[in-house]
Image (cartoon, rainbow, N blue to C red; front, side):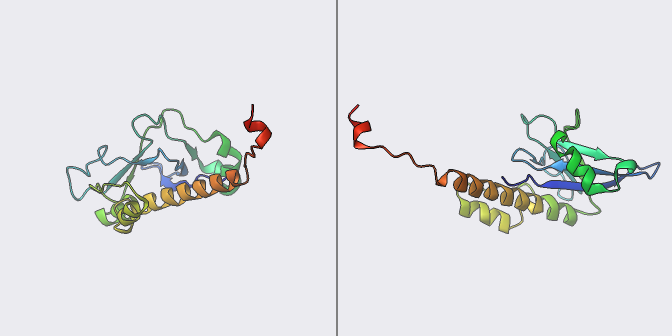
Length: 164
């Protein structure tokens, strides 16, 4: 089974300058919410709000403080199973300019996505940003994993079974 991708943010407390790391699990419900920031009303909004959708519940996130920063990979691996932070419904990521935000999470678009081709065209245009690309790569990995998992499961029905 493919591992869910993580968005790892290196943060710093504004007054104490104490570093920390926030890791967000990017499952199929986690996405940029353009209505939670000013992207729909202000064309040069430098903020991306990451949420799990309206019915997705709290974000599956973890915050590591200075004692946990070294070694980071072992801390992430040890806590991966319990990747939940109570009450965290949104993470707002502020960029220096709108270009960084657009590269990361794209922009609100009116693309009608019904087919794989339409989705790929939307992603190619950068409407979903790198966040959308990562989520699509994970989705495709899950589809392949499920196909391979169930490919060899075949029910053989014999003539004797049909007479019953």
